[in-house]
Image (tube, rainbow, N blue to C red; front, side):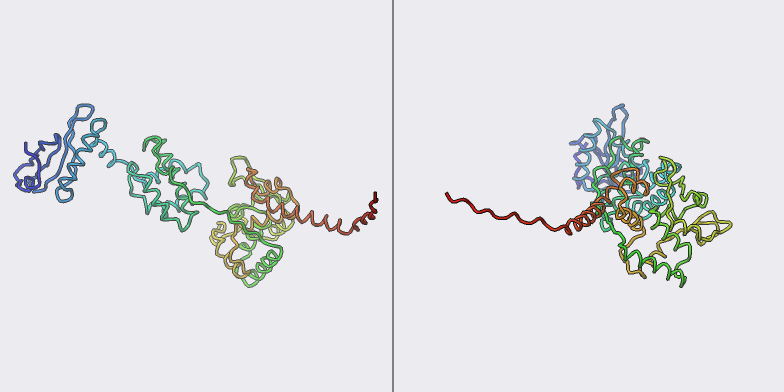
Length: 399
C-alpha cells in the first residue's frame, strides 16, 4: 500500500477493470483508476450500523491531491457520528425551493388564503423567488442564499420584504412537514429592509379638482361610467380597492343605505357592514346595471368585474396633476376628511373596517390638527374680550 503522490497517480495505467489504490498514510483514502482512464479520489468507511460505504470526492483534474486529502480527512472525521454518503444521497433526493413552492401553494394556501393573496403569492414566486432560488435544494439552502435574494431586490424594499416573508412562511411549512430539520429555517435570520409608511391625503381644493377631472374624463370618454363610479366609491366609502372592483349587487342594500360584504380582508370576524352616505348612494342608484353581470363595476368581459383600475386611474391622475396620488390614497383621504369633520378615531376605524386600534392610530396626528384648529377658534373668541385694565401704581411709603 503506497503513499499516494502525484507521480504515482500519474503512473497508473488503465486496465480492463477498475482498480482502487489506498493511501498508506490516511486509512480509508484512495484513488480509483477506471478502465476508461478516469481517476477518482474516494473514501471508504463504516457507518454507525457497521455498513461499509464508499464515497467519491472528485476526479483528478477537477480536484487536486492536496484538496482531496483535506476533504477526505473532513469526511472521515464526520463519519464517526454521521454518514456522509447517506447525507449526500438525501441531498440529491431532496426537494427544491421550486417544488416546495408548488406544494405550499397547493397544500397550504388553497382553501385558506383569499384569491388576492394567492394571486400575489404566485406573482412573487414567478417573478422574484423562483428565478433566484427555484432550483436550489432545500437541504442545501443557507442564510447567505436568502440574503443574496433579498439583496438583489433592495431597489424595491417592499417587494424584497414581501418575498422574504413568503419564503420564510414556505420554509416554516417545510419544517412542519419534516422536509427540513426543525429550527433550520435560514430565512429567519435575515432582517427586512426598513419601510417608510407613505401618507398622502387630498386637500379640499384637490378634491374639487379630482371631481372636475372625473366629470370631464367621462364626458370625453377617457374613462367609462364604471371606472368613474369605482373611483368615486373608493373616495366616498373608504373601501379597499378590491372591495369595490369585486362588489356584487347582492351585497348592495340600497333601502338600508349600506354594503354587506361577506368576503373581505378580515372576514374571519364576520360580514363587514359599510354605511353609505348620500354621494355613494347616488353613484349606486344612477349606475346602469348589466342584465347578465352580477357585479357593480362591470368589466370588459361579459359577466366579469373590472380587472384593472390602475390604467384609467393613471389617466385621471395625470389630467388632475396628481403624479404622487395612489388609488389607496383615496381611502386615506376618506379618513382624513372624517378626522377633519371631528369624527372620533374609533368610529373612523369602524368605517374603514379596522380590527386594530393601532391601525387607525396612524390618523391621530390629523386629529391633533383638528384639535389645534378648534382651540384657535376658541382662542379667537377670547381675543375679542378686552384685556383687564392694569392695576394703578401705588406710591411706596418713605420711612
